[in-house]
Amino acid sequence: MALLIFICLVVLFFVALINDMLESRKKWVKAVPYSKLVNATLQYTNNILFENKISHFPKVHILYKTHPRFKGYYRNSEIYIYTKSNESIEDIVLTILHELKHYIDHMKDPQYFEKFNKNYDFSSFSHFLSYTCSPLEISANEFAYKHQDLCLKFLAKKGVIKKV
Ligand SMILES: [Zn+2]
Image (cartoon, rainbow, N blue to C red; front, side):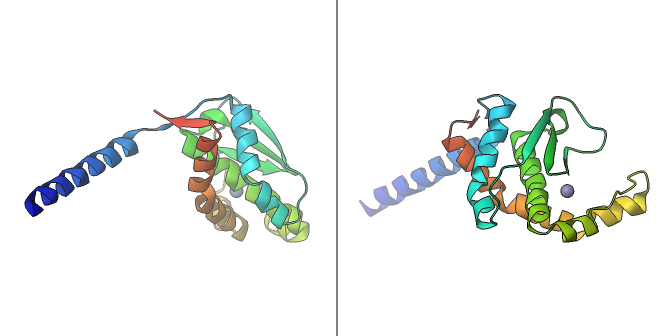
């Protein structure tokens, strides 16, 4: 009897393992247009903005093309997202969250933000490097990676994205 239970448990363990493996091979796809995906991602950040005493969402421009260098960028309180420069749903969510952190930092402390956010000349590698290593970039990346999974789960729950 004990052996039978043991065998059952082993079988269950492998079924769960195979299920997990199949699940991880699936990928996220969007079930709505980009505009709704962007809006739902902003909705995810609603409480974060509230905690930071920011009462407005930033305006987000969706550009249905590639950008030679960026997946998106932040300028003058507005976010620009290049859909074709983002390879996956994970990618585009990460980009929106990254740019949204720039918006938060800008709104919270415009002087600090502008001090670091000079006009960089991206044709120069040293400028590019100093930009990538700037405190604003590091904090935007940290924020985006911290919230990416939770945001994906939020979007899935809302039916904005699904796994296929
Ligand atoms: Zn950035």
